[in-house]
Length: 124
Image 1 (cartoon, rainbow, N blue to C red):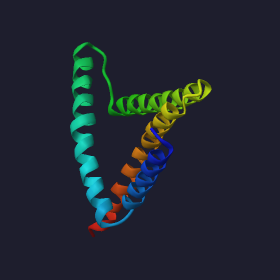
Image 2 (image 1 turned 45 degrees about the vertical axis):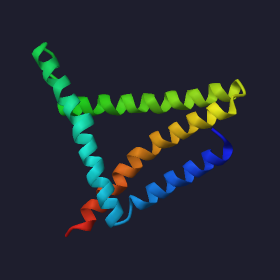
Image 3 (image 1 turned 180 degrees about the vertical axis):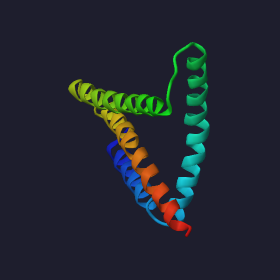
């Protein structure tokens, strides 16, 4: 990934974060983010919880949330280590790609938080 494409994608990501804080686009982003979480996170987490309960390991919702948060933190740390390793090997293009991945991983929770707040403030 070239320098120009990297900067352009970072600017687009910043615009998406800024739009998620506004009333109408932010509310729409929050609604779509909620649907994505319901299908791709909540469903598999509930299925995994049921399987673990049937195996004799009771799991609470709080424990599942902590486990998902820990997994997300490990993904962020792995992306940061990947950037560092690629910079050490003088692979600038691959380091930019890993940097964009890290920026996306950091921006996703921020987008979710801002858009959910915008969605709550959009309707009285």
